[in-house]
Length: 290
Image (tube, rainbow, N blue to C red; front, side, top):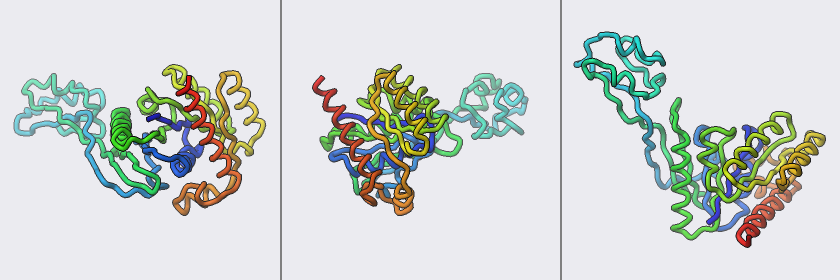
């Protein structure tokens, strides 16, 4: 089983649309949505949930009113201003445990926090592991690790060839949790200044973790001068540009209908995404031979 992670460095590059099309093209795979802070792959693939599991992570302070003497020490010293009128605001509480340690009557305890849910679902394109992080909850890196672990388990149990993961944007903790140990990262960018800048940042993260990468330039014809600059940068970094996908309203129309564009339209976009999958599978095959 080989893991393919689709990253973007920034949001809005069309990453999830490409993942949905790869899900339709690839055979014998499991899908994973590692963008747990703002998961949206399920909106495109219309999954049927088979299993829902609570995700517990982090702690929140709880004050026992019967034991509390209202000495004000906790709320005076809480640097996050999470305690007011001797009650804890669970949104503001960072779970550091300081108040629990300094309470003179031990009236404050730390309770484990239910931070979200993760799901195992069926789709028309194979099993999907996805998650939903609760509002204002943290530890999304741990939830990403849980999603990847479950996807790997399904791949091993069903003897699947690939895990295709829709990664989170940016270069922070969820990206690192998504990226470590994968076989190939596909970096989706767009020919804008922010797209070019964030591509360089995510390439640096891939290099740091020793993950091979290739680039897909989405909507390349919106600014062909910037596209040439991206291609020049990729050549200088010895990174292959696997595909240049043109702008086409068919992508938006397919999203509105809730289907991958490769199943909605057989135009230039679908042909380029087909070429992209051939390049991805070819690079993985060459890696196995190496």
